[in-house]
Length: 227
Image (cartoon, rainbow, N blue to C red; front, side):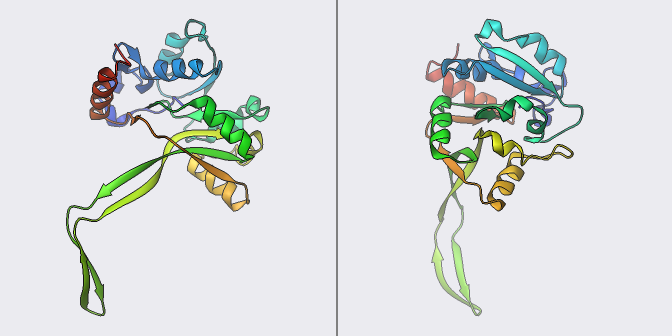
């Protein structure tokens, strides 16, 4: 999914689409594609919108990255799942979907294998986010303070923006209106179709703002994963 405008990264994205912004010496999308290739994924479809010509010009047919890349051009904003309804090839076998601005050390092959073995309609990569409230929290009952909890910590299981899908799940995506992956998950659950989680345990970067790029460059550089 590489069609977003990257509005939170302006002014950089006025001239360069977010998938082509560099992490070290390589664009974000190239790092994702190379990791997919390392895990045996050689057929890639890029869904494009904003600055599509620049992305096509850089990646071309994908040969120099060890993959075959084809493109779907969105004529209007379709959301994070909408294009799936317009790609007949996705109805042939299970496949992965990833946002084009996520870097992580997830094992893409294991995600797909676990998805297939589970017979789920969709498997969503998840991560655990822990939030610490900065103040004491009071418990009230009938106008009285009944307890206090100092700086409580809460953990949440969050969508990590990477998915494995079975072909039948694509039929749940409407072709006549925009749709997000969260909408698809809700439709599958309403239809009684299983949705499974897959935990991301290592690094994970959602490159939404300039500070996210700085953090990713520093962390991956220290790990020796980028030049």
